Image 1 (cartoon, rainbow, N blue to C red):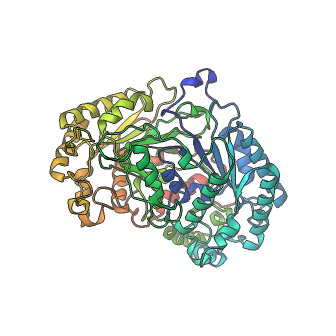
Image 2: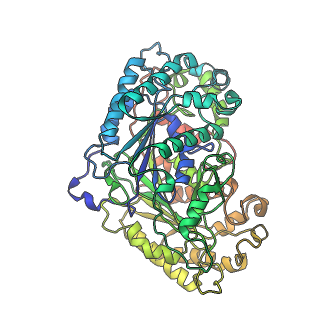
Image 3: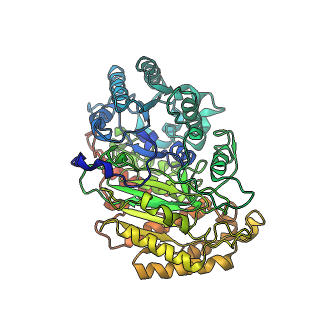
Amino acid sequence: MEARDRSDQGSLAMVGPGRPQIVLFGSSIVQYSFINGGWGATLADVYSRTADIILRGYGGWNSRYALKVLDQVFPKDAVVQPSLVIVYFGGNDSKAPHPSGHGPHVPLSEFVENMRKIGEHLLSLSDKTRVIFLSPPPMNETQIQLVFGNALKGRSNEVCRPYAEALLNLCNEINVKSVDLWNAIQQQDDWLNTCFTDGIHFTAKASEVVVKEVLKVVKEADWKPCLHWKSLPVEFPFDFGVPNSLSLSEIELMRNDQLEPAPSATLLDDSFDMDVIGICVISREIENKVLKTSVSGLVELNILKNLTVYVVAGSLGRFKSHASNIVFDEHSENILPSSEGDVGLAASSGPSVLGDKVDEECATADPPEISDAQNNRKRCRDFSNGGWGATLADVYSRTADVILRGYGGWNSRFALKVLDQVFPKDAVVQPSLVIVYFGGNDSMPPHPSGKGAHVSLSEFIDNMRKIGEHLLSLSDKTRVIFLSPPPMNERQIQDAIKGRRNEVCRPYAEALLTLCNEINVKCVDLWNVIQQQDDWLNTCFTDGIHFTAKASEVVVKEVLKVVREAEWKPSLYWKSLPIEFPFDYGIPNSLSLAELELFRNEQLELPPSTALL
């Protein structure tokens, strides 16, 4: 990939306005942080209205590989630099040397030197770029043996512990904040049996520990400006002006403060469940060019990501902190709208085995051992507690960025007002795909005060027509998918949100599908596909409106079906996109990293995602 011309960087924003970028950079502990109640998706949910969480995970990588591409992933001459970079390497480095002389092993002294250079490089990006290092965590050696057999020989706590301790000492030397995962994980009750999916990669419980420790560091750091979620402004603080209603900013704070669902109950003290409206966009393929994008200039943050997925919607569009997935849900008229940020660094592809990391030994095991390891690993990737946005982010983790633009409670009228700001036509880099959801809030009955979310059916269709036409005009390669309003469980909603009825919402869904045919926009008929699910009234909603994991699975399945069957050139289907940084350890008889990455998406057959891919 080649770098872009920097003469026009001022207009490089792909999604605006600009917001802080928090980049997760590391091996499979990072890449797989959007599944299994993952810590990456939880952070994305916590910061959904205030900052973008950008995934730069490279399964199987060590600090040596990271150092090789550091200047490409984090160019010093980028106009917009990340506000915070959370870095994890060390688990692969600490693996025992492979007999062939190849593999991820890095001697302790070199590991420390590599991490020193990585930390110093990141700190030099700008005087406001902050860095947090995560130490290597412990592992369950017995579980590794049960899951992988002999495929992952050489992993042990005895060998890994010095890497964790040395990294923490280094952080003190170079003034980098740190999270001591080695000890934090072991402080959990029954940690050996509750913190790992396969002995190495994290369960939701372990991810909760990561988020809690990261937020503690951010909250206590003397950084100016403060990067704690409570200290950051909420974008587009529009208010419907309904009498006696909370302000949108108050609602957004309450969403994080009061939500208490497991496993994130202790993460943010308390909070009450709230949805967001959002837009999901897949940014267009950058065709072998360096992608450095940002919402108001983050365009230069990183290079190598081919695709960016944006999600714009109502409350159906948030990352469920406890679900490790982006869920875009609509909310009542009293929900506060706001927007999400920019597209960050380009994602890269690395050695990723069927889990946190791809170990060369897993790939080089004899066929029976590989088969056993793969079959066991299938049980370790679980979308059962996650939303559709995070699932898409995981599927596209090596090939495209999924960017959340969720605005809880919004209607199509509000969306139209800020459309030029969120998707400026003069941006040098435009999104590849935008997945849009509005309509549920529009179909709310008028409020007695004359305020509120209600938009008449005729205006809703006109608004969505303008939104679709605007997005299609961004570039000749920008694609658009509209999601129709889904049905709801009126009994489950009860009196909490008066006026929401299927009888009123259905015409909005039907009219939107008709519009899509008129303006040549792809669509997903959520109205009917949700009702085709077994016992849909009782299994598809958390509160009568917002999606459970089962409903999110339906969304992902339908979106991927549309993308796969669309005659778009280039194709945006995950299998058709190149994997970034296709490095290989060169171990004899091992699968290529690209083959392993395809296997990860194709062969893992866990419920509820069995039918997704």
